Image (cartoon, rainbow, N blue to C red; front, side, top):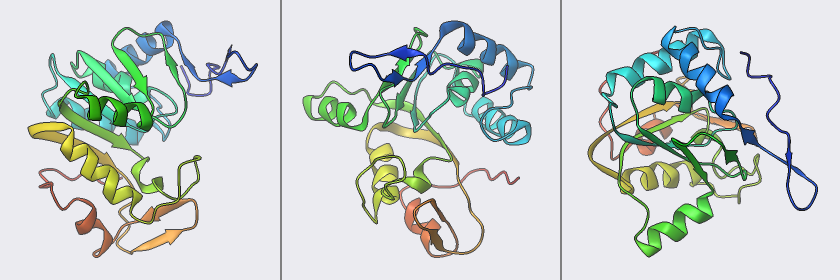
Amino acid sequence: MSVGDQFWEWPNVKGQNVPLWPLSMVNEWVADCRREWIEGSYGYTESRLAYSALKQMALGGKHIVVFGSERPWLEACALAAGASQVTTIEYSNVTSLHPAIEVITPQEAARRWLSGTLPQFDAVASFSSLEHAGLGRYGDQLNPWGDIMAIGQAWCISKPGALMLLGMPVTGQDRIDWNAQREYGPVMFPHLVANWRQVLCGMV
């Protein structure tokens, strides 16, 4: 199944379409992951790398949080790698019909954190998302430290020893392609992952 298949199909009370992740679609993508033949949002090579990394994170029976996801290919890979539950934090009001995937907005995540009802996650994953944080491209508030704050929040809501899969443009040069994305080099990348220790690197 390609990522172009329709799942923007459920009108809300205002007559607007909201993202819908059907159970059958997610299950098919999980099966595609296990065959290592999922296109994802960025092509087969990058999707295979992401799935390979998730398998090495020993996710069996664990709860993983995904930062930013328009299409649930990364969630499908996490389930295929053994995760029992996925919570996705996404700006859009996504409706997931898969019982193992919950999607909440950053505002809802903050509300649960303050009320003590947001769990500590076993693992973190984000692919081509955090480099956009704070640039306003997806309707988020402008914040020059949005990416650093998001990684800090990931550290705060994950358990000690949690692993993180982080897919983003590490190009060797520090730059902001306003307002599309950031590219990371020797200055910005160490600041971004200051509280984390890199254990594996896969390049496309």
